[in-house]
Image 1 (tube, rainbow, N blue to C red):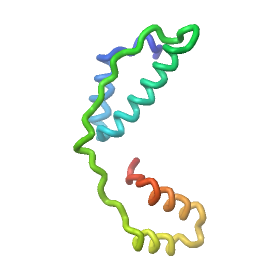
Image 2 (image 1 turned 90 degrees about the vertical axis):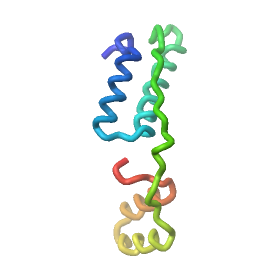
Image 3 (image 1 turned 135 degrees about the horizontal axis):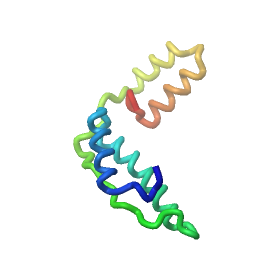
Length: 104
């Protein structure tokens, strides 16, 4: 699809589809932010690659509180079980350090 075909109504339909697919508001906002950034870069370039930037919807994220963090003793126990697998320990370290949620 060309950038000139993207409208605010089309973005709203995208949001509705994402919600129907079970995505949380914060995840949808991140997707929209990436697209908005691409539009803004295209608009600011010389010559302009995008003639106008549509208004992007923004969802309320207050109800999207992260839950289920593990504590350090649980993390160390997981690391013990992954002792022989460097890739798995790396994945655990990243998840523990940055709070990555299951399914994201």
